[in-house]
Length: 640
Image (cartoon, rainbow, N blue to C red; front, side):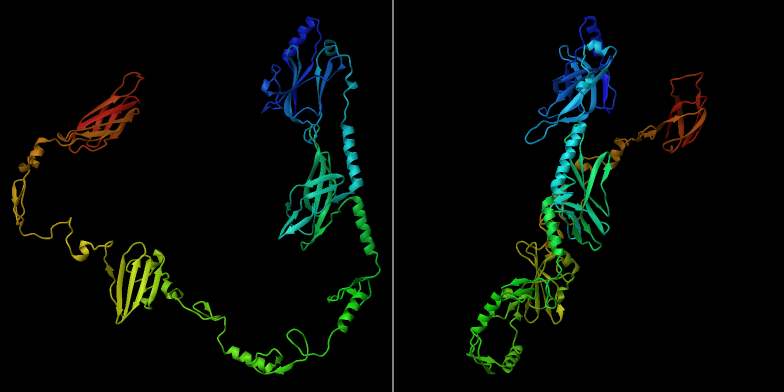
């Protein structure tokens, strides 16, 4: 809802004008667009004009008039040559002084001008100002009713006249070509794009529109209405509705007109109900249909009289048309010039002699059924031409090549046992996963298998990702173990051939050929040697123990401990929230031998009376702390 206010600045300016004996002259309308403006919120009377970048248009007051002694009205008319802009703020001002007198906050409105075939709009905006002595202060004498005219009724009448004139041209409804045709693709029903008139309103469907048909029988309706606002461009609003029945109705003060485009029966069959073309075209079509329906006789058939169509065709087998004399004459002339007895040839009919021969190449005799049967029996005993050898048809001589023999490239399946591959040929395993589920592979990895025939069978398996290969033989029903072939890329390891690695340890030694010393101690390999710490300038363990202290240990935290590794002394500490009375604490670790001292320190900034704290009991693991008031305590215990 729009809000309006007379500004404080105007009230002050108006008083000054009265003192100066000057009239209150308001002569300019200001239009602005303020993003996010709330038109429902009351306006502060101290509000000023918007910034220059928000003002979209200014225009002098077109008319002003007096309503009564205390009310005057100002009006402005923005023609179709003004635009395009949006506005939601309107101000009435005195241009000379820049005094802003009245403000209106309104919902955003659009001002459009005539351009490029676009119809602009004409907007009239008025402001009514009410204050004591308004007529006298403004010196306005013209009554407002002389120019405040409501054109709404006239504009509505113009729209209605245009609608009724369209009905005179197109009737209650009219559609062109396939516009608004209801059709179906598969199970999907849709309305075809196009143009139509309904109740004089022109409706355009820009694109095919799918519709949902959930129940049958049902009808598909076009619903149109002429809609708009006082400040907008009016246009036809249309929608498609699927319903069994629908009538014209009024909604929100707007008249809606409906028309059934098609009906859909229980079997989903569509019946088009659209009138097509102008009213004259519709009436002509209706007259033709009535003429057809007025006939007293049905179409002629071979069993009943009726209307029929003539035909001059001489090659038709139709029983629904009648032959013309022209067709009869053409047939007669053709028959008259036909058959005279003559021998038959491959080019014409005639008299022919029969023959039962099956080895003749003559084209002057006809074969008997006996000859045909003999030829058929002979053909049945032969190899059909559709038979193939290794995939090659027997339509001509066949040459076989190694690539035609499948076993030169036969795949090994999943979970296969290589012991079963004894037919000479080439095989391949394409997948590691299939090799892993198979048996008797030298390695569970993809590769190729070559099978050779001799006194027995030899298998050679090569892995796919390097040159490693293995071989084994089948003889006397027994497979030998797989043997690995060594080459430059696949050298044997020392362990595989029982050799000593060049970077390994000696296998055995009874005595070195040349005696050596290790840090001055002779070594020839016949016995172990012992090197003392002193011989290499190091402390012995006993010397180290006598010279170095043990490492101290600790556990740090709010409650913690530390142990002197040399003396064995242990210090432990902690913090507790004490209440009046006593508080038992447990040491973080137990003293192995004895607790010898416990110190308690109060922690507080608020002292009331005497603070007393003490230790009443203790052991190697616990202690009891006493206090006469409730306050936190720090404690420190020493032992070993």
